[in-house]
Length: 197
Ligand SMILES: [Zn+2]
Image 1 (cartoon, rainbow, N blue to C red):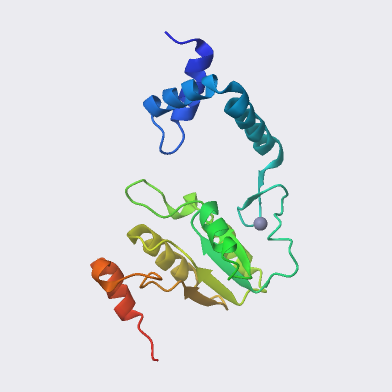
Image 2 (cartoon, rainbow, N blue to C red; image 1 turned 120 degrees about the vertical axis):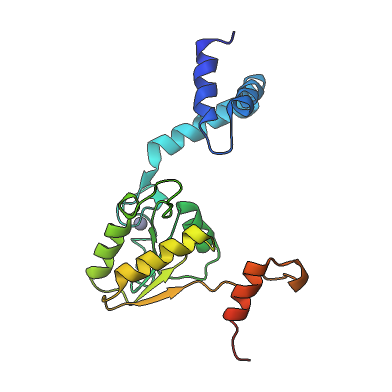
């Protein structure tokens, strides 16, 4: 029987995405054996996150200030807004340095299966931002999944009537992808989105 402290830590870790009770227990034992080299660093990193990171009340990004560094960056294009499902998507797009506008994080995607409804996502705040004016383009950068695309369509409908251009990420061949290896859905999208040379 493990001590109460170990049980509590194991239970906390087991709630992380991708970790179950078994891997959580393994992680706890691994950390205990590496007190100086891993445990102390993890504790410090967790404390730093707890003490410094906040959610941006404008866009939903996670940063050390609210509004976040992206929302307050005057060099960014204020007239262009990119809508993403999760903060991880925002970070991925921003690492690419190709989109120069600002973002809006929905906090998930519509899902009948998981019971996620429009009011569970940051859609009303998105409509409020767009309605406030000053935005020309809303780029819907949802994942190329059924639920992601359902979410994009729903948002596009809600934006109808507002004076903005609604665009969507193109779907198609991955860079370096060979036709042979692609699934039918990707191929179909690539054919539908074909363009003149
Ligand atoms: Zn922000």
